[in-house]
Length: 333
Image (cartoon, helix red, strand yellow):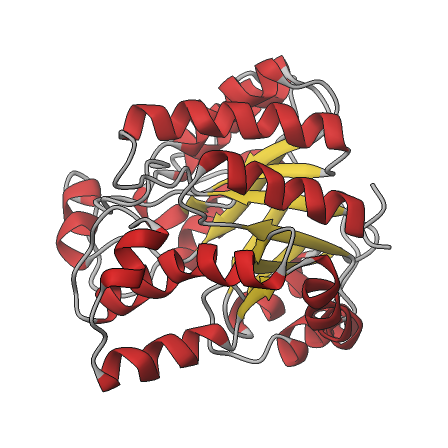
């Protein structure tokens, strides 16, 4: 069975505060470490009332400090929001503190709406076009000391100088990042938990086009899924109703903390709402252990995933922890 990992967004619900959501992440990380999960990644999102994870580098340090074995990383740093030198130094510091346990996952999107994105970047260049590739190349040049002699950054060193940048993973929801990750010899994680794109093509493309690099001689492809697992199919369906209502509201441009199953049961869905929920259910994995594994196994094989990473936006923290316990059992951790 493949290694199993966690993608955590520190979900905020109608029953808890953002501060409690962050503390819940530390609690879940301790459990995941005990259960034998391979890695624990935290996301970067901004201006979303249902997600407290806005500063992954801070959370990575906190999580690594309370765990012992699993790797901890970003899923991911939204590079358009950050100066490459700043990213290099922060993740070198983390690697220096927790050697061999840090991952640097990078994303192309800002992780928020256009206005918030501008607020995050307004003292940078603010180019109108997508400058992810430029920023990514700059990050690599800082690490490789590869700027030309005449470049003003030639003498700039990312500190601490004697600590290597952690392994890089590119995050994607289509084939662009898959091709780029293959070209530079980085790891790749496909975001099937929110993408409408068929994951098979980009993940197999990544493997076929992969070029070995000094950092990574062989490809490593991660399949990220949204899973709601419980003791029974019926209980999982009840828990997933929170996800359904949250998604229906988002499609209407309404962003709120994650509702309880009771709130979801009382909600009056329109026909359009139900159509959007059904569409989202095509990529949401819901059920007891057997049904969940029956859903995931063919997808894992078709994508040739080296690893499975699971996010779970369950309303109740104890039920969310139990979801990961059941998955650990199903994967034989």
